[in-house]
Each structure stands twice: as C-alpha cells, then as structure tokens.
Length: 398
Ligand code: UDP
Image (cartoon, helix red, strand yellow):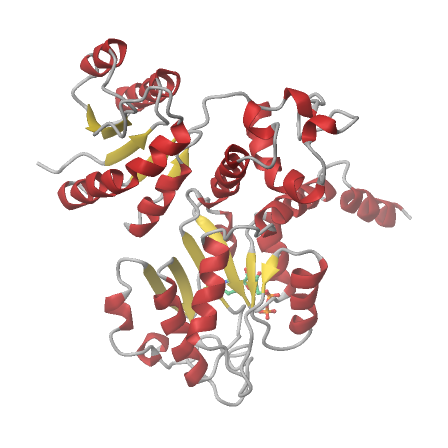
C-alpha cells in the first residue's frame, strides 16, 4: 500500500507551543489523508502534562522526543534549540530515508531548523499561533532594526505597524527591550529567516528570446548546481552572435537541453528542472514556492516579478535592460546583480554566491522587505481607486 504523504512538525519547546501545533496537526489529519511526525524538543525530562498530551495523540500523529538538552528547566528556548540541532538533523535524516517528508512546519522560534529542511530539499512553512500584530512586528523588525538607531522603548511616538493600531516600543516583547543583548540578535535573526520559509525555488528565464553564449550557458548550469538551491530554468540553445538570438525565433529546431554540461540533468534531478524554450512565467512567478527570479530585466518580467513580490537577480542582456538592472539594484534595492569578468562572462562561483545570498536570505539582506513594500505599492496603484487606474480613466475621459 502506498505510504501516506508525510509532514514533519517541530514546535518551540514548551506547552504553549506544543498545544497549538498539535491542534493544527489534528485539524490536518482530520480532513486529509496524511501522516504527521511531531518532533518534540525537551529542555528537561518531559512533564506529566506533556506526556498526557502526547499519549492522547491519534495514530496518524507520531511524536519523536529529542533527548533533553539539559536538566535545568530555566534554560531558554533559544539555547535549547541551538543545542538540539545535531539531534534534529539525525531524526530528520532517518525520516527522509523512511518516508520522505513533503513539508516541514515550524512555529514561532524554530527557524534554525529551516536549514535542515533546505539541506534535504524539503519545503518549509511557519505556523504562527499568535496575533497578526505580532506577525506584523516580526515582518517589520529587520526594517526597524535598519532604520531606528535608539532603543525602541525610547522612541517618543508609538510605531505604526502594517494593519494595526500604533504600538509603543516599550510594549514590544522583552527580547526587544535591550538591543545590545544576545536575545535581541536572536529574535531579529528569527524574523529575518521567516522570509526563507517555503521559498525553495529560483526561476531562471531570459525573456521571450534572450540567449547566452555556450560558455555562459555552461557557467550558469554549473553555478546553479553549485548553489545547491532548487531551480526551474527555461533553457534556450546558445547563440554566439547575439544575446537576443531567439527573440524572433523562439521555436528554432535546436534541442536546448542538449547544450547543457554533461551529466548536469542527472546530477540536479532532485533539485532542479530545466525546460526547453518556454514556460508559463506569470503562473510560475505567482506560485508561492517561487522565492527568486534570475531575469534578463525585460520590463514585463520586472513588473511581473514585483507584482508577485519575488526578489530578483538582475542579469541584463540587451535593449534598456542594463538601465533596468541599475534601477532594481541601486534605485529600489529589490535585486542583486552578479559581477561580470573581464571577458564578459559571469563565472559559476559568482553565480552560486549570488543565488545563495538571495535564496538563503543572508544576514543583512533587506531585498525581501523592500520587495514586499513595492508589491503592496504596485497592487495599490492598480486597485480600483489606485493612482494608475485613476490616471488612466482621467485620460480616457478627457
Ligand atoms: N515569457 C513567458 N515564458 C517564457 C519567457 C517569457 O511567459 O518562457 C513572457 C514573460 O512573462 C513576459 C514576456 O514573455 O511577459 C517577456 O517580456 P519581457 O519584457 O520581460 O522581455 P522581452 O522578451 O521583451 O525581452
């Protein structure tokens, strides 16, 4: 009999985290034919309340207790999670070997585990059992950290977080009250890492006709492979004469995939998909799993990426695309741009470095936050009462 689709859940230590995630797991198995493994981190030996809760789980939810990291109950979650990482990796590996999980669900503070999911190429999701206001704060925290120089509690005015009443800094969580402390840095890092959950796929496409030289095609393939990130690549046959080689001839009869480096498709089978010549770009950019877009910076592609809030890697080829790339990287900070060597080639190491930086959300990278602002602004501009809609209707009425 085929095994049920398998999901792994991993809550932050403590009953206040275990109870809501178990509630969510029960809802899922009640309405879907799934198997769930609950990895339970314990600080000291499990309490009776914990044992009772785990004992009462239905057969479709299987708990695995990670060995306690300490007998000191006063140890905080942040230390406990860090110390449990090697045991978590071990448990994860055995789960991958038995019934490969389709997804990892973490909760508020276990984002370190996202790295393990990425290592095994498993998409991850954050379950956030707290108020939308707390979530808005987590999403805004990296920006607040960049823009506010004093302690939040010393700001004279309350802060306006998206979609909420203004909140004074002194009412922020305890970890945010002293920015010099490790707890602050830890929570800030958690907030930054929310952005990497689920976005495991990079979309690579050079518009309706962009082409690369054979050498560049080879470097891109090897750079994608070195990055170890998931990708979906629209591949065109190489062209040594022109970067817009397929613009008027996107259906030429050469087999694009035959130009890829030997063994590349086999080696990347688990991580990537190369499709010849054309893919439904709008649908792909609108899919929740698309976390980055390596684009030639054609203006349609740029707008489609911004409308869907997908951060970019700017790889301009022809026409006004170099100017677009400058605007995206230096103007509005929603893209990274790889460096081209003296021969005009972007080398594999550079490609891998930039892809990893974007997809793994390197510390200090503010592109995802900036992108979400532009996504919102774009949606507003084309809404019924938005500036773009109004300007167009005023023009039509004139
Ligand atoms: N496009 C697509 N699938 C592909 C390649 C391109 O649907 O595999 C679409 C893309 O969504 C965009 C257009 O083709 O709407 C390309 O326009 P853009 O201005 O980005 O680049 P150009 O092709 O004009 O250089």
